[in-house]
Image 1 (cartoon, rainbow, N blue to C red):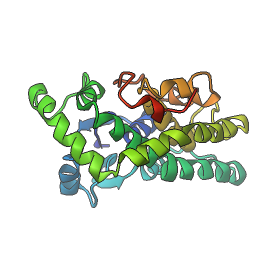
Image 2: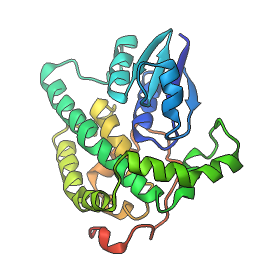
Image 3: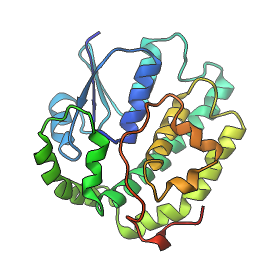
Image 4: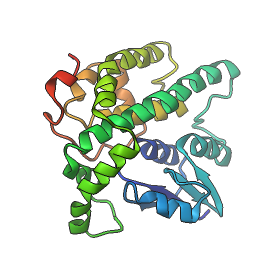
Amino acid sequence: MATKLYVFPGSHPCECAEAGMRLKRVDYTRVNLIPAFHKLVIRAHFDGTTVPALAIDGEGILGSRAILRRLDELRPGEPRLLPEDPGPRARVEEAETWGHDVLQPLARQVAWGFFQRRPRAMLSYSAGAKMPLPGPLLKLGTRPVAAFASRFNNASDEIVRAHLAALPGHFDRIDGWVADGVLGGASPNVADLQIGAAIRLFGTFDDVRPLLAGRPCERLGTNGFAPPIGRVPAGVLPADWLPQA
């Protein structure tokens, strides 16, 4: 199969899809794009503008949820990303839907809240990646990309601060799914990957990491994922925005 996965470094939905590719042992070529400008490239090849985007033998698949399901169809053997038993499958899909519809956009807005204050930190997430522009041009583009993406994703101060205040409650909910066995099994399912990708991203923000430390959900950010690349140092956001660990 001729397979290309279009991503931009640091994107948690892209990490979700890439973890699925590794778990299902699908060989692929990774195409790294630049945030914001990725929409132009994706529109030229797919019927849409979002990443992750998977091109496989002429078929185009957009979005982490659709990609994970297609992987289970292409590689129906173990490990299964979706349980075959209807009961467990329904519980996993409930957690996955929440991870996709609630946690994924929340993590995206929090991320751009950090990057608009520390644009150069974005470069750490593409360390070692083959990018379409040379390093000096990427460095020059960090500030305008961060400003545009923050506005496009509505990462206002009010929204980012509200999301940070809500994180402990969201982590409690995820811990509950771990306790119930919906998440955190020996082999990651679609909900593990969807939620774990966001947890993995939160762990790269030094201001947020203490909120995760020691929680059951913390390990979801490592199960099935490559070690994180990139970091935003502590002190980027005002201290009073951050809830107590």
